[in-house]
Amino acid sequence: MSEQSGAVGPADGTGRPHIAGPRSSGAGRSTARGDQTRQLILDTAMRLFRERGYAQTTMRAIAQEAGVAVGNAYYYFASKEHLIQGFYRDTEVEIQAAARPVLDTERAFVARLRGVLHGGIDVLSPSHEFATSFFKTAAEPTSPLSPFSAESTETRVRTIGIFAEVLDGSSVRVDRELRPMLPELLWLAWLGVVLFWVHDRSPDQVKTRRLIDGAAPLIDRLVRSSHLPLLRPVTRELLDLLRVIRP
Amino acid sequence: MSEQSGAVGPADGTGRPHIAGPRSSGAGRSTARGDQTRQLILDTAMRLFRERGYAQTTMRAIAQEAGVAVGNAYYYFASKEHLIQGFYRDTEVEIQAAARPVLDTERAFVARLRGVLHGGIDVLSPSHEFATSFFKTAAEPTSPLSPFSAESTETRVRTIGIFAEVLDGSSVRVDRELRPMLPELLWLAWLGVVLFWVHDRSPDQVKTRRLIDGAAPLIDRLVRSSHLPLLRPVTRELLDLLRVIRP
DNA sequence: GTCTATAGCAAGATAGAC
DNA sequence: GTCTATCTTGCTATAGAC
Image (cartoon, rainbow over all chains, first blue to last red; front, side, top):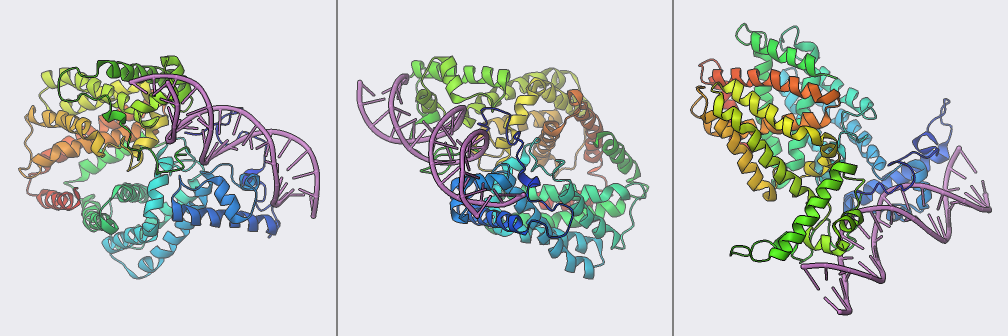
């Protein structure tokens, strides 16, 4: 794939500011001008990505369309991929917003879970084509875009927080030991749904909707049963496995 | 990334022969010369990929090392990514081979499943670094390298066949309706293990080994319990979901 | 500290001659 | 089927303006 740095390794390695450059430097609104440019480039990129797809949008085109020089785009974003981080942040915020009404009204665990998952897909929906084209980047273990990466920590923690709230705000009774791990497990389930959604070629991704409708009650049932003496050993086994495996 | 096709979409879209070109045309050994060149390019690519990694191996280097022109390499392989298909085929054959002794000796479902999974990872093991670098390609839904793609059908069917044998050769009793879907489900579990393995940064990927050791008995337990009156409804729900979702 | 302009490299991919 | 020449594009680098 590219990585044609020639001199140093891939993406970054120079001593240039990048993301650090115009980032808030302590006080309030410091570099207003820089932030504006940064945002302009990001917005333009997002627009073009959606219009033409990720691969078909060149850095030259983004710069031209935004009315800046290519070098300037690289001043703010270390690589083309780093532009996607903007998409991430926006999306995460929207998903939070979409979850709000559900979390504020529903009490039942199934309804909360179902609502949050559907809300998340609602948000992603218009970006299906675009998401498909850059998804491979996120799938790469070493990519900063990977949901497991250090760079994604902030987003990840916040999203897991949604699922903690799904659980906390509900009346469901859960196995005592399972409970603390459950938000993260639900987040994994969400990633699974997204993975399915990306591969879903059905019209309007209806299958993903059906997946959610089917999976939510199933998860609900399992979670409820987790503390029953019959499933206890299975729960135990699962927990042991998770503990061994986690980073 | 690359995809600098400029004219058409990404990878392929031309009317050129590619894979089709020198492929056997009905009779026995038809285009022997083409097959030879093709194989030479493929072998060279695989060697260089393993030696230097995927990204660090240029098409120019492959062509030069193989003693052919760049254009010639592109005559046989639509893109650099398409060269990975060779890796796939080889790997699948090796995995089959690794599964053989287990399937021929073990009778217990857990042992068979565990053995096949470990054997698969044994085969993949030496390619961890390489696999990591190209994994993103396989994760892309539209890629011919995706395990769900039409191009991967042959490999996919064969691998699912292994899990059918894991099941058939064992003495385990399974819910009547679940049974026909189980090989494919086990294959999905295998994909999950591979997904985990790719992201596994622990030394020698020990965590993946622990995952297998923990997951196999869990799966065994669930499969065994699937026909019990207590889990029956859950099994039902799961089956309904699967039927709705499948392609 | 922000930004432009421009030149240039490396590498994936293609065109068209032979 | 094969080659050479060329294109495209991600990315870097430099020199300098505001």
